[in-house]
Length: 486
Ligand code: 4AD
Ligand code: MG
Image (cartoon, rainbow, N blue to C red):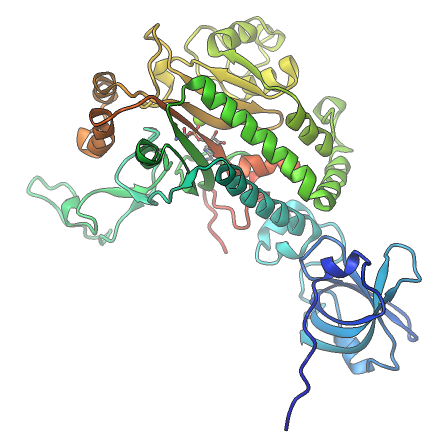
């Protein structure tokens, strides 16, 4: 017996443009709501291709009562029928169902997502189902658009994407916040003659960890290919339970030969402006939804905690205005003389030059003082990583951090120390074992060149672009201290 070929599925996004009506189509997706009466049912169907639902009109003359009963919130269905201009307000088109097949039921007694706004905390507990909520659908689509935009930006400029290793034997940032990688029996690890754990017998014959940054290897690429970038997962075992930190996050790290700090700032600023504009041009429906969502959330906040600009305006602001550039030294002067510092309102009072900046200081500069993105440069050498180029004053390094409203640090970068002797000295002074970085030092011995790069924290970017306030809500499956569910 030959089965009549089933018509192909069309994505709801394509149908909602209203370009095609009075055609027979098939859609597949998940039921958001069903309402109606004994004469007719209206089913709101979402298939993830866009925020909006397609209204399906089910007439009991065509669709049996038995099928209709099984169509509840969360169920997955395949529906086929005539796409027609809608008579009701709220949508251009709707589908008059001729057949409906229930692909998967969702027991209304136990299905956790109801057609109402759930709290973000609750949704984190059901991260396996939260992509089916409007908010997370929107975030995931925006996240995808930004991934694509990152590759487009660098590809169009002729950068080469380099996959740097996830398992490494080095600590690029020198902060010692690494997850160990081992196959040793933890209860009974092999020991050397002195009774210490013998890592020579471990899988890689040495101590290894998950990478905290792809930068060191990206630099090797830049010293051959000129302009490269990495976009990979990075891991940090810092025990900071904040709304800005993840233990597993994604980072974009361009590295450019023959570039100095100025070039580096120009590239980073152009990149962030491009990303903001790309989101505005390509994610409008989702951004409008997220803007409204944020406005609702902010309703109950005190006036000084509310954003002065809405989400769309913030993105436009970044796309169209130059960032404020100043040195660390200038920033310290501003902070020292600031009202909150004098009145003891900072948790960490700024007393003297050399202090590390906390997020409260960064946010004061960005949100209160300059009211725009800020690029801070030339930090004290002793609070920054070993690879940053020493300035002529021998006190500061050619570092740059980009600070964003509502986020704090979004980018960290620098011109790199390309002078062999200076770098070796630095490695020694910071107690970095030369056997960990000999290959890195080699690039300074063989055809060294000035170069610079930076790292953009991808989830911090997505916080900014979506207006969400907790980093756990912009990555599908967040990894934070104490949480690795799903
Ligand atoms: O400032 P960081 O530590 O710089 C580096 O890793 C350099 N190797 C980058 C480079 O020059 N190639 O990290 C870069 C960015 C930060 O500005 C921040 O946006 C993000 O990565 N980041 C985090 N994002 C989420 N969770 C964390 N725990 C993060 N730590 C850093
Ligand atoms: Mg940093």
